[in-house]
View 1 (spheres, one colour):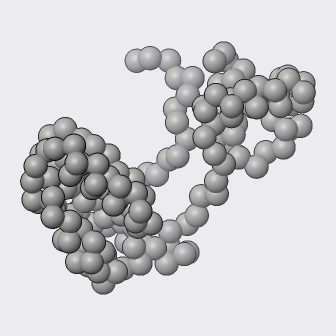
View 2: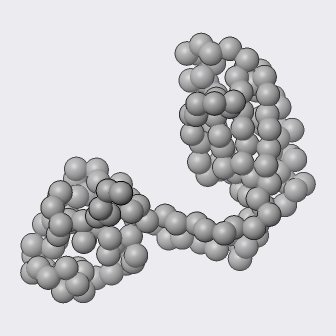
Length: 155
C-alpha cells in the first residue's frame, strides 16, 4: 500500500458512503484510478465490508459489558466449541483470546441489566468448559473509534 491507498482508506473510514467522484477529488487522482484502487483494496481483503454505525442508546441497547472468561481446560475441542458458540450470539460484539488472568474477553451489548442477566443465565452459565466468569459493566463511554490509525508515524 502506498500513500494514496492510505488516504483512500482514511477517507472511507470517515465516510463509507462517499462517492467515487468525491473520493477521487479528495485524494487527488482520477475517478477511474480511484475505482481501480478501491477494487484492489476490496479484492485483497484490506476492505472487508461496508457498514453503518448505530447509536446504541437510540436502538435500546444501552448496556455494555466486558466479560472475562477462564476455561476449565485448555484443549482444542473445548476452545473451538466455545468460540463457535460465541460466534452465534448477536449480543457478543467482540471476542478476543487474551493472555493474563482471562482466556477470553467479550464485549456484550444488551438492552438492560435484566437482559444481560438472561444472557449470562441462558447462555454463558450453561457452557460446561467455563470455570470462571467476571463481568464489568461500562458506566460511561469515553471514546469509541472504529477507524484504524493508518498512516501514523511510529513513535
